[in-house]
Image 1 (cartoon, rainbow, N blue to C red):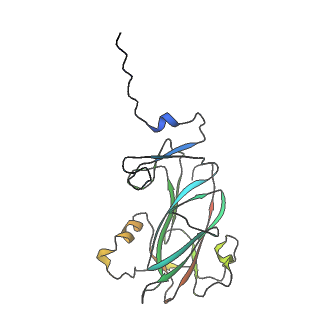
Image 2 (tube, rainbow, N blue to C red):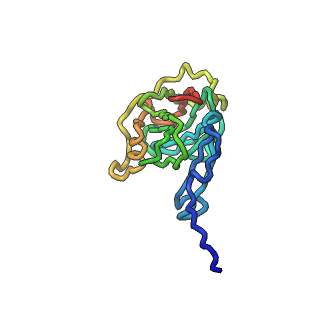
Image 3 (cartoon, one colour):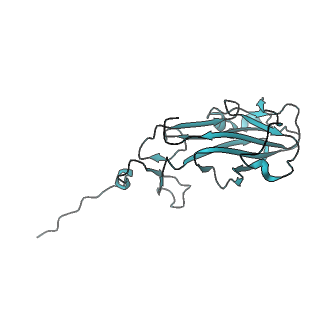
Length: 211
């Protein structure tokens, strides 16, 4: 008697989705993941516990970044509910002024972005954009202690960053700036500043409801 052929099952996010309506499954499919081209990495997130925010950043030089005091390890950071600070030091190249454009965001929509495919929508969109709503302040002298990287640091004496025309050496070749600006972020800086710039961006994050 011939053996019955088994039907081939194609993997999909729905096969791995748990019964809990609280968790969301993310699927990363890219040649950049360790699995290689055609591979995939799956990751569960709990949107009531923390949201994975993606960072887009352009500067006129080198930048050192911190989130709530800890150095950035990648372009994504898990943020819990509460008060947070994105802190960075921009050291411009040559005679360029210290400028930056950044976006820290979360979106359910993976189309046309680098967001992973998600098993369901949680009805949230978060956009922290330089020059477009995000309050950013800067100092022109190095802070005395590392406390400037923490949320509760008193930055009341720091002036606010303002929108500026991007100071770039070769406008036609600055593809990265264009990608950051597509998020809605704008170039900001301090008028007249030429040396390093220490920047803080404070924001509050609420979880468990529509943004």
